[in-house]
Length: 389
Ligand SMILES: *Cc1c(COP(=O)(O)O)cnc(C)c1O
Picture 1 (cartoon, rainbow, N blue to C red):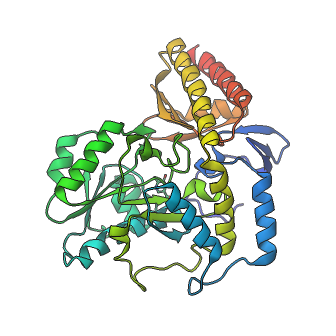
Picture 2 (cartoon, rainbow, N blue to C red):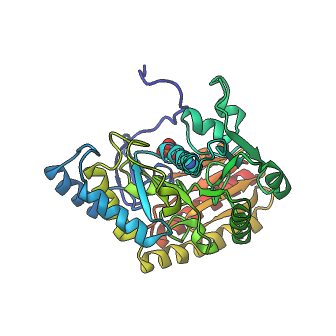
């Protein structure tokens, strides 16, 4: 029997080791891993540079309190600010912590302006911002919040794509709009660039803040270091997490100077957040994933992957409804429930994961090889063929 709580419906498979795009199961089978811990292992498994980083740093220093200076964190924060819109960074340990800290920053900003009632956050109905008590109520999802009352107030919701409802829901107590530029759990739904631009304009007009949750779509996953960059706008606050540690848990809030100045000593903290071991990993990941060459390669691979998947959509119109995504954050939307499809892919040694709206989510490592993508396409083609019968 298992002594682990039953809050996951786990697949009956476990792994002993990983290398690059591959995972090796306890029973000796080799799987092409296009989940990568849900967009976490951006450099694949057991990347030599990350192994070296962990080895070196673990011999020097693992953890010190944020009561002291942490040079490794200073270094990573500088890199993140030089690369993005941000002027300041606060380190956390996970995505949910990062989104919650983002909400704290937005509220504290208006508090420091003498407007403590300007504290409501406007989010997409049925979005995903993590599993902590506040983050589940930010999602506006019945399934995630059921049984976890009392309801955490302070969140309003609008329907994705319904611009009228969005505008109507903004009132004098609204502090910020929080959206994912590309909804991950929500089914790989991309907010078009023109929409992000309008969203920025709307926030400026209403004098509210724009929070973009890049926990999943950030860290080069979309083909830009941060997904919103393609739209050329500047948000106020951006929580990041998944990819930044390359497998080591790190979360962070990126913010501009305007909002960051309200976070005075004592307003926020974390025991583990930003410790030297985590920061060493973040620095190594950052040095690799934000180079022009690395990003260009992601876009080349993405075009190849997406165009081939679209060919499969033409070939199997009764099975595939739509190909979604950008960069290496890809979704195959099916006409029917995706569980059987994912099971069949797994039987053929390709690991993928579900998302909402019947989507099969595909998250290869960002340094995936073209030959590995071709192999995945072959398997997806076979599964479509079998299901067509
Ligand atoms: C995964 C995710 C989170 C939560 O991250 P955790 O590390 O699981 O807490 C928040 N927002 C988005 C968009 C995510 O994809």
